[in-house]
Length: 320
Image (tube, rainbow, N blue to C red; front, side, top):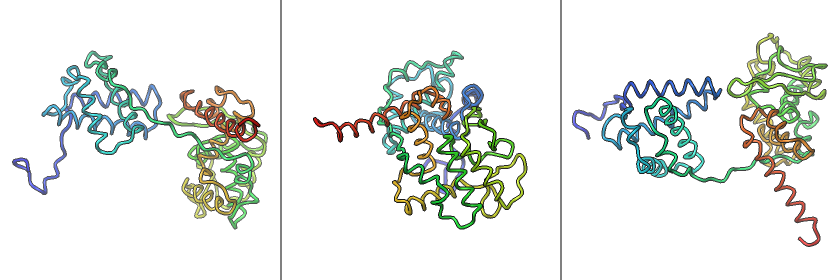
C-alpha cells in the first residue's frame, strides 16, 4: 500500500494536468458542435481518452500532461493497446477507443502541441462487421399488422401499430418515433415529415398514407390529453412511452407469429432499408432516409442483399 494511503482513502486519482483537461474539454466541445455527435458518443470518447490518460500517467510515472504528447512513440501506443487487450476488450471496441484517442491527438496537432505520427504508424485493429438481419417482407408485414396484436385495449393496438409502421415504413429509429409530437407527427394529407435525428441533424422523409392513417387512428383512440409539444405515444398510465415497452411488444409477437430473433425495433429499420435496396432503391437515397452520416454505414445493406442473392442462386441454379 502506498505510503500515506489507508484502506478507507477514496481520494480520486489525478490522471491529467489542468492544462490537458482544458484541451480535452475543448476537443469534446468541437466534436459536439462541428460533427454533431450525440451525447452518448461524446461520453464514450471522453471515457476512452480518460483510459489513455490513466495509462499514460502510469506509463510515464507522473501525471499525464501536454508535454508527454510530442514525445509519444509507436511503442507507447502499442503498450496502451496491449493493456486494453489484456482487459478482454474486443477488436471493435479497441478500434473505437483508438479512433477517439487519435482524434484528440489530431486536435492537439492542429494547435502545434502533438503529432499524430505515432498513432498513424499503428494499424487499427481489424474486426468483422456484423451485418444487419432483416426480416422477410411477409414477416415484416405480419409484425406491423394490427390484426396480429396481442394487446387488449383498442387504443394500445392502434398505438403499437403506428409505432411499428414508423419503424418499417418510414425507417425511423425507435427514439425518433417515440419523440414525435402533435406538431411533428404526419397526419392524413401530410405525405412528408421532418425528423430530428442523431447529433441534432434534421432530415425530411416521405410518409405513406397507411402510416398517416395509423397515427390518426391512434390519436382518435388515445384516452389521454395530448399537448402540442409533448410526445404523442403514451404508456398505459399516461406517461411517455418507453422504448422497452415496444421491445416487449415485439418480443411477445415473436412467439405468437413464429418470428426470428432478428424481429426487433431496429430489425424493422434494417428491413426497411434492405427491402428498399432489393426493389431498386439507390444507396445515396437510403443513406439520406436512414440519416446515416457516412455512406459506408449504409453499404452494409449491399452485403446483406448480396448474401441473400447468393443463397437463392445456390439453391436454384442447376449447377450449384
